[in-house]
Length: 205
Image (cartoon, rainbow, N blue to C red; front, side, top):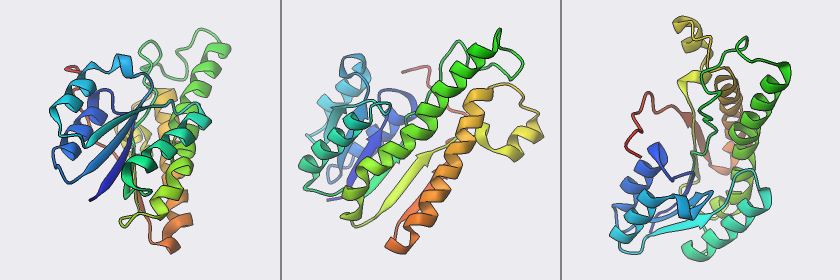
């Protein structure tokens, strides 16, 4: 029975991934969210399924919480995870579209970049590290990091996308994180990729 761990599934792309993966009754799908009480769509989906969709509360900013989530996931899946999908990201509405010259103060720029780095880069690292022992016991050994074209230097230059700075810069760093894991874990038979879903309308969630 294939097992999936999905980090960040309360809405948007993560919710749809949870929907599609759990549609196969043979899949065991464990998802993490920051706050169970604020995930009405996910909780509704869980009620529709046959018991193969499990929700664990954990914030990628809380390293110990991610370790506990991995431990809990292992109890659900029988001690292994085949595929980890890291989908959690910071997309703060007020500052999302700002460019490097659009912040009122240097302090505000620093604060947004640090907050974005903590989620989009360190959050990925600590999530992967927490679940790696389970992944090493899995059969697929796959790690998928949900990236963004906003972090692709060629796309940003060709489109002259000067805004969305904090998100784009940290997503570029996230791509490097995935590459580092790919190089580190290749000898163990892992496949690690960063993929961009493109433009997705998530207004319905």
